[in-house]
Image (tube, rainbow, N blue to C red; front, side, top):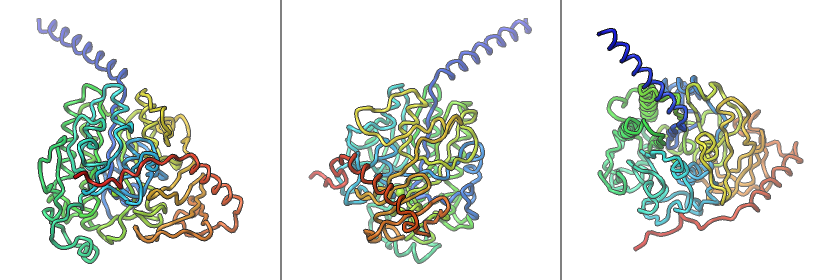
Length: 468
Ligand code: MG
């Protein structure tokens, strides 16, 4: 009898396993995007940082692909995020203009007519959850739950906005590496859906709480395809870390914050392994722009790259990027070009959904590179900031016609003569070789001109005031 029962259980078990395996192979992959705020290209162990410990991201990179020349479409938060969500340059989707980003007194946001990644994935009935900083409009019609996400837990704009007294973080932080801010001085709302559930948000625990919410969502939705967008509000200043991490990193508070993010990335990957869905889940890790250098030790590092956030130098727009999907993403280091803009075409390809065809996209399909079957189709990058085209990259060459001073938000400089750099031989953009290569200067200038003639800018959504 006992043997019979064991046989029955064995057969039932096999049957269950077989059907779940079949449904997994038919199912499009889950997509998880973990995005940081102002994390520099040089801030992870696997990108060469000597003092910040990132064992989880280092393991993710070793098991997956580390991209060394991966770009965001703008060197500040709002336009960069708009490009990730739509696969379109901010000059096309309206999330750029004279203002750099959205503020609490902004009445605009990402236009509801734009097609976002979660809206794309709704073609296949993905469960879509967002946990973190949005920064694409805080009025109801622009919030994540109006733009394709089923659920939202996070802050609607930057964590340094809504200041309410207390010492000015800018001055304190720049002077004192040990300064720890008071979360009560930033009256930032924490929202669930369209409701404010905590104000000011307790930012000391925010990295952990975003992650816990994302993990709960993954557990709840594991039996259907899901999309998780987990954009941490750290390490944007003011910097906050939970007690467990505070004072632990050789790199100081900034290191504590990045090490906490690393540990929380580890928890997400561990959850996927525990649920045995890691072989059906693509995880991407990246950052929205380069380090905020004017905050000195409270800002990050772009490593060998020139300058940081707010500039169109490499340090402003090249970001540390890792892709992970055990058994699918071919492990290794990729030195080809890629961009957050490319997530629209790439995700559409991997999930057999249809990216929009009724509008111009700036998105290349990186799936062949991820899966190890081909090179990257991206051969160029256009560097826009505040609705101005500053530079272009074509292969290894980069031409600047305008630039900001190396510390972000410095004065815009219109160059009297374009500057040309070979950013593979000269990763730090130190040696202007325009005079030696006039034909390359001419070719890149022609590329910029052709690109600009292809742009029909939308209304400046950053400039819309709050309605009365
Ligand atoms: Mg940012």
